[in-house]
Amino acid sequence: MQLLEQYGWNSFFQSYKDSRPDHNTLIGRVISIKGFKYELVTSEGFHECELAGKLLFGASPEELPKVGDWVWYLPYDVQGYIVDVLPRRTELSRKAPGAKSERQVLAVNLDAALVVQGLDRDFNLMRLDRYLVQLAACSIPTIVVLNKADLVDDTSPYLNDIQKLHRNVAVHFCSTFDQRGVSELFDLLGQAKTYALIGSSGVGKSSLLNAWNSTVVQATGSLGVGTQKGKHTTTTRDLFMLSNGSLVIDTPGMREFGVTMEAGTDENVFPVIAELSQKCRYSDCLHQGEEGCAVLQALDDGSLESVVYDSYIKLLKEQRRFHVNAINKKRMEKQFGKMTREASNHRKKYKY
Image (tube, rainbow, N blue to C red):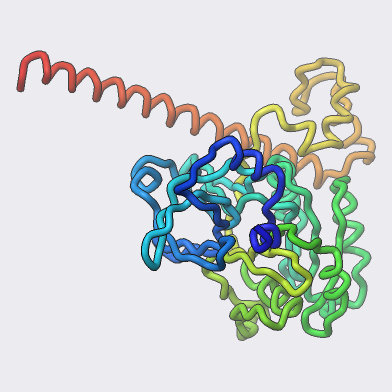
């Protein structure tokens, strides 16, 4: 099990393995997905697998193996078949891009996420707060990485802006161009711990990964002509082991990062709002015009930053819209299932 332990195997997963003794299946971790091919790291080395029919035809998109998953597989000749997925410690998810009211799982079993923004006009406080809100809802610790620090003379305004969000996150400035801050951030990554690099296209996630480990070669794009912004290059999610034994999942740049936080998680994802709301006159205050609202009072007197309140209102509306659409979808699926069963029973009764 030594190789598996190097890739993050621990007592959490061992307990589930022990509860399901099966001498025919083996354990592996998904480190790359290319179409229908899943590359696993196993106790014997690396193994290529496909999905068994049970998963291929019976599992929802959320339940299918993702990069970072631990799976049971059956070896067969030169490849194997994944038959089941072990329970996950954490899931990094977002609302699926577009109009769909579905949750898309991006990576799993993370110990922390590194949210990367570039200081070449990519820095956006509202977008950053969106990442932080969703990661808090997913119970994943976060480190904010502001790359391309060589392009600015003073980094303190960016730090001051992030502090306005009142979120307990570490902020690190670095530059893969002149290597400032790169090794200091690398030293924070723990052995056999799993991290995900997330952020928009061209912020330097792959460049950062390459700077940490010369044996990891991720394609990087040149600066765009005219914009001087990085280009999107990563197209898949892959898990890499770095020279210090830490594990990093590099993800493609994301144009959209919709929230899927569960109802009732406001206290965790908006701690400042939650603290102020305890002083509101009404326990069910929505902080949108009610009398005696401590949140609006703090907004008026300046003790609550407008960027925090604006982010709260926008993401709260998005959260509610997502859940209403998801409930409506389930209701329609239930009605369709009922109609299908009734039609089937009708055909059997009259032997059509």
